[in-house]
Image (cartoon, rainbow, N blue to C red; front, top):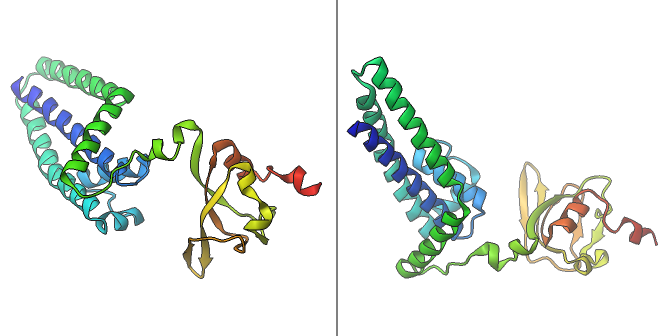
Length: 235
């Protein structure tokens, strides 16, 4: 039974480590989804081959976080497997059933705790303070800073052949009147995508462009559906 509780403890500490790593990566500027995925990938040693991983290893603070997660994962996964074997090795059918039930209950409780938004916010505050103290990086809560809680979002809008955005200058579209700012454009250049930042009113939008926009969610959704300003454009 001692081995079983040791296994649950290892799993809990592993979860906490991955959660801390994900929040720490998020506070360096990554989106919550990417930060969580990369933290889990680094800890498990699988899937850490995506394009985003290049941006991680090029950033000194992110690289340090990833290194710690990889080391934790190497120790945690190996220890978990060994403890799991010890937990069930040589046990009778009744003991195996009992221990399996306890393990399942423990995993369910851990899963419920993992979804706690309260715990997430507490951990985020603590980790932000730690990063400010132990690194020279300026740490921000990007969700609050960019007003995501107020309905704003960063979105990717694909310009299709039938879009009313195509072949127009940004100054012509006057998207800012609707609260939308085009931050950057990804434009196809052969087999690659070219990043275009520092846009001006003279920047022309082409078919196939991917617009990186900051706007209220409903505005971005309307433009994505090619409905916003259609009536106004015809008047």
